[in-house]
Image (cartoon, rainbow, N blue to C red; front, side, top):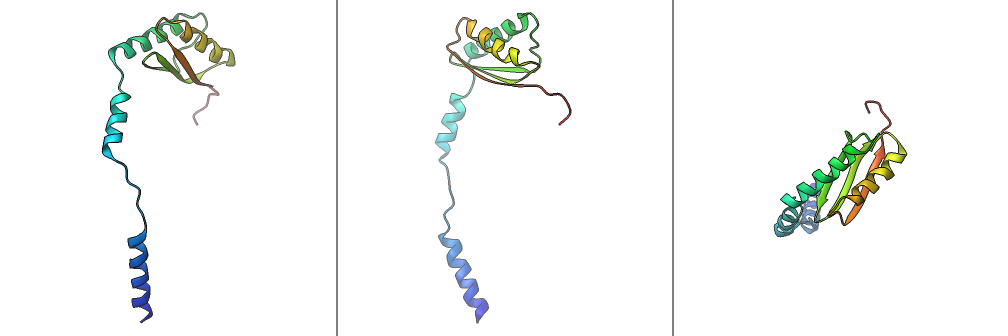
Length: 111
């Protein structure tokens, strides 16, 4: 008898547990708005070229993302000065309206 009562209790609890769900339209709209346009790609390339031209700046670990004039820098650089330098260079590129700097220091090693 206790097994049946326990089973009934588990069934009723499991039926009352809410499961979060998300509308697909929200995800589809977010995916569309995050796609880079040709202008975004061109701006990202322009920022990357400007970084590559900077004397003593190693652009190999830097990723540039541009969306509607807003540029995000991510990845790693070898010195703290290069974090600020990268932001200043990105801001100087024509078409850049804002810069989000997520660069970090590269500490080396394999993990």
